[in-house]
Image (cartoon, rainbow, N blue to C red; front, side, top):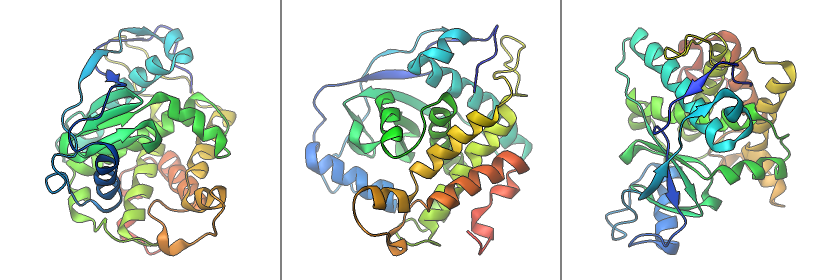
Length: 287
């Protein structure tokens, strides 16, 4: 998606840092703590002796123009978060909920979090204990290695998906779901597919969401090519595709995120139907 000419995005919202040694309880232990939390929802940080902590920022992403947001990844992250903030700040209260913004941390190489210590190999993730989205923007290069085409909306889909996990956290979905199970119809998969649907929901509304600071819409209307980029990114991170790319057989019983087809379909559901109710992956037997 292309940010609208005339847009301007204030700095300070996205913190950045990392690149140093991980905190106490780090290394392999910290990564294990994080992996267990992300895939099961079980917090082992206390058992493992810390398992992370508050990240230490070295700065923030500064103010960006629309032109910079269209060409620079850190600016695109900051501008996308700005758009997501505005959209969800209206959508959640309209549905009777209470909205709060997530933290956002762009890290380099390594970072300590309340969920454990991460490296860029971990990929983007949302950590409920500190309500923060973490990502190393170089992760987007890996999407092409998994078969996705590079493009801004592909990157924005990933960001919007992680923001979707924050929405699930503040609305209670994270606490209610049994995230310790695996399988094609498990709660773990339902959580991820709902976050995909929320990403599509935002994408479908982003071209009509007005930036209150500038009075212009955040993004130009999505082109078909851009939409295909986002769908390709969703397919690239499907459990079946990742299993095939790793050289192993496809095993639906081990899935935690859903198949490529499911991830594309639920993003499309949010994009086309445009309601929170349409994204209720827990209310259907047809995942």
